[in-house]
Image (tube, rainbow, N blue to C red; front, side, top):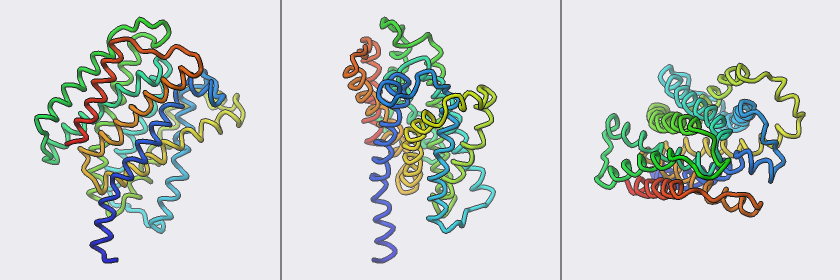
Amino acid sequence: MTKNRIMAQKKHNWLLYALITMITWGIWMTFSDPTIGEHYLGIPADFPSEMVYVVWALSMIPCAIFALINIKWKLDVRPKTVALSMGVGLLGAGGQLVLFLALKYAPSYLVMPMISVAPIVTVILSSIFLKEKVSKLGILGIVLAFVAIICFAMPSDTEGAASGWLWIVLAAVVFICWGIQAFVMKLANNNTPDAESVFVYMALAAVVLIPVAFLLKSPSELAAYGWGVPTKVFFVQILNAIGAFTLVYANRYGKAMVIAPLADACSPVICCLLSIVLLLIAGMNALPTVWQVCGMVAAISCVFIFSRE
């Protein structure tokens, strides 16, 4: 097979990488919900979100080692590559830490669809700095994204479904971080000869923020649960690491304006539907309000519109 055919095949595989990210993240998001995690996996709902972050950061290490082996340990150490890749990692890890906090105040089927509007940030930045065009249909998608935010901000009539407005603020921080992250990831991939180096620095950034989590919660909080609970959390969180790994490849061979909605935004749709089904099977109240349904429809519509960009 010629070099040109190999490169063409890799470019074609961006969709496969994006689909892997979408599925793994959708399942990860679902079982990251404290209620679902406790009922189906035996992970206590009061397991500190800061400790979940620590386990997630550690779950990035096996994938990082695999990435290093894949490039024969020849890590790109040029300053620009390091700066951009660490930026990708810090934006992703920072958003992750905030996400785990948000899930303490609202269920995943509300938080995740709101985060799905992150592609609007990617689309805007890509159109300005990468000169990628936004069609009239894309503008409609941006409007729908803001409609989704307004709908999710409406008070909930379902007692215990969500606690106050803090979760909305936290979720907004996450989607801004992740929207910028997708744009910076494309810049990093354009600057380095291999996608693996980008992911390794992402994993390093995740580990670097572990002390921040320990400032919020003592390491003794994690030790109090023994090995059983953290191990279960690890197997949930490694789904995120795998999705992040394939996302880097998807961004290398595909357009950021397309990858963001397919990977970052479609996964909350899977989470939304799977979460509601699992909660209903468990006999729990999982029916959202009218406003929340409208928000979900707007967010999902936004995803499909961006997928056509």
